[in-house]
Image 1 (cartoon, one colour):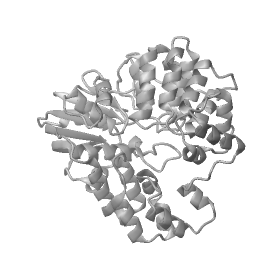
Image 2: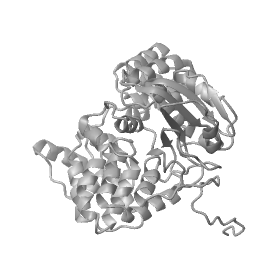
Image 3: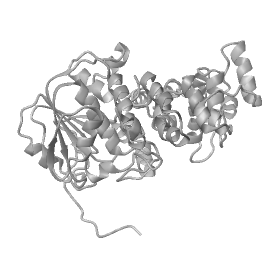
Image 4: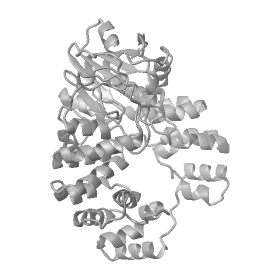
Length: 450
């Protein structure tokens, strides 16, 4: 039964903690619902069904080109997988959006298993014929993948890759692709040598892991995610350390290293070296930067019920990243109080942030009022669920939102940025006219204020 004894607040939207939030446009509301969500996964304040429902309601209220741009941004820059697929599914329902469906779908599908996942999302509310634009987009995407990629992701489930091939009537590029698709249909694709296959074959896990590491068969993300499994299997430490030292970490975000270090602390030193080297020689944000990190109770929740990473991992990872590119940085945390922490680097900064004060309330307004030093910019990393009214910054101010709750506080005089990938730093660079580390065509698309 719904609760009736609730205080009605007549003066506009509120955060989940009761603080006054901002009225924002449907496009901005869609951005905040998409760019920091793991679709259908529960968060601290909202469940995944509620977030997905809000995305569905907002798509028809936003211009078609803006929805299409958000879908490609969510997949390409923010590395999200399911949210952009849902955006395209909802575009296919809307007459005004349909013309952009095939092109957008072809761009957002970047892994072979996303072909089947999109069809599963399309049929989530019951089977229905695929639209012509959807078939065209799936066919365009299908031609991207070689035999290894198709074999790696041809998983059992309600929708198989062969089903998608039959549904979209894709035409192969050439005779070689024709033969690959024939083997897909007949279930005769060559078995790929992946870590999943190696470990599911019944081989000794220690032997399997060491072979995969020596042969460099693990990507950087897979290596970090499996360090605990390697530890439990008794993998030779020298092999693990050599793999961490040589890993390609250019596209691995700091929060992944922080999460790995929590479960494999004996390799923290090697992880920190790899993490800091991955940040590279980047142009600095000049002048004095204040970093203000939310460590309230809601921030200590899991990113999703199926994740081992906390929302604080995302926040601390961004703080580590920003600390490296700021010329001068002063670092604070806020919860019930405002606490200044030493501007350390890497894992030491994470530890200083996490232990700085108890994880309680979210008094962002109070914290901002207590900061009395001058700065060129202030960057707040938060889930935006403040108890109190949030004033504007004294100068240039950014709010990086790492959650998907309906209402938030980081608008008005603040520049609002959603998500926790390296793209959030590029937004700041673009807005301040600093040379970007992204290719020029990506950089030009990011020069907007959210």
